[in-house]
Figure 1: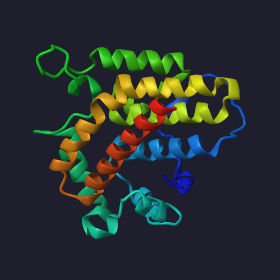
Figure 2: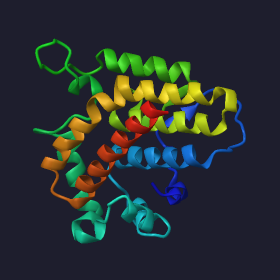
Figure 3: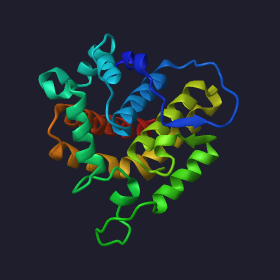
Length: 225
């Protein structure tokens, strides 16, 4: 992963509710957190013109190509209106769509069935946000287990790692590994595989493929660490 992703760190999903911050010191978790934030922005809402233009500027353009995201291969991936329709078709409806919530996508009955909105996963996420001194932004106020919220939470954990003391480092990385094992890693890869099969634009196919690979690499690195 390129440190250049640091150049577009979009923290629009979660707000700090506790005062106090430490000086950033570790570039590697900051770069990881920036990528989680970027991915959170991708799934939070329809892309704006400014967001798409930002993806085409250096060093972001080269960083994305390093991550196998080359949106220039599909002209539709630069059309705000087309991507807006695609976002609604994939994630919002009306009609058949792919609800981007952990509670909907996890098995809850032991028989392969899926859950309902605001199930146990959503309540667990609310607890995590509160205990971490975070509050959901207005767009996801009632959707704590939205994929964008969970990606933003991982960005927050990376931020915490970047600021922690050496004695706290193992605990910070254990917290990330547990969140991946309990939440993000349990459903997002399989969910985004369905997005890839359904999406008509390279924008959502490529970002989803990159997100799957990133989560897999994170699970491997954190479990080894």
